[in-house]
Image (cartoon, rainbow over all chains, first blue to last red; front, side, top):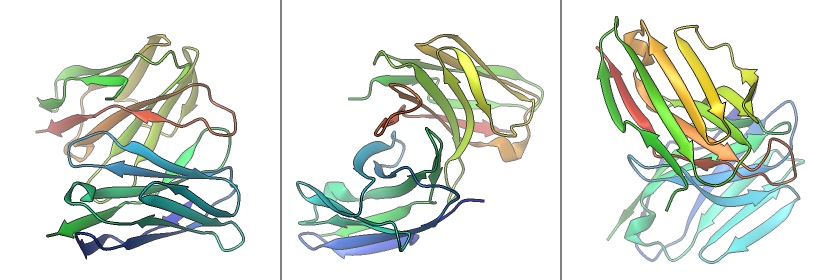
Length: 109
Length: 115
């Protein structure tokens, strides 16, 4: 089966940086996605990596190492509105996404 | 603003009831998905449709019955559910099934409670 691991919870201070790690063991690999989900709302797309390296998008960056089965999402200059659950998902074929259980990030003032 | 809507947002039903969840996407996508999200667990893919044809039925019990009348609408018919079926049911859509990117867009979900 597919195995996607990420920490359950993280807490950080407003203005700080937080790194959410995701490790995966899947039968195939065709891209890794990060989604943000606020409580009671839809998951929204943050980033996509299919090749090794860093993808930067404003305050958010995502890194992938396919050989290590590892990714991280980096959130910089944290804001209170960044308090949410962050989901790591691996696509192992054309369309099927296997999700981690999510990391709940709490930003404190 | 999401291009995928779901109704109802909240549903409480007894184990002998029959109800349906509705999903509509306004993005012109060809593929639609049903996921189940239980507390502290990963999203579980339930069903996938491409151009109104079911392409994935992920070992889901028959008390869940999907229907896709056209590429914009997706239903999940529920009957004789169990308390462990209580969860958030998310609908998603994507432009197509294949392709190098093919991001999935999610709706806000229906919070289902089975009593």
